[in-house]
Length: 83
Image 1 (cartoon, rainbow, N blue to C red):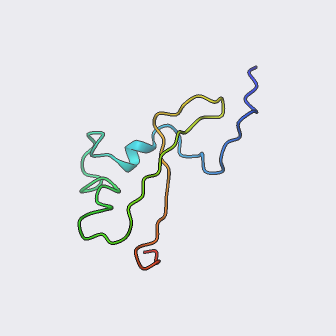
Image 2: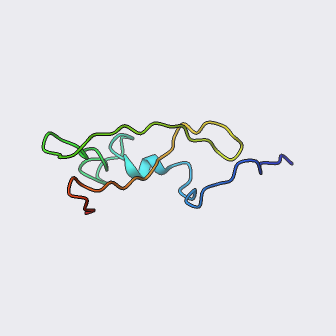
């Protein structure tokens, strides 16, 4: 049996390998779930505040790069409020 204890899972690693289908069904050619995929219109020309870019890499418990991952973020608006 292979030991995989050198990288710990995060508490929220529960969605499974198919999370992209639930979040972007139109992108995956599954119509009728949402009019548009979630997060497609997060920023437009009326959005106030400073733009930032977050970059990084996601690894599984064995240290292999995960190519299909979702990171959930929360960002306050330009007034410091959350919807």
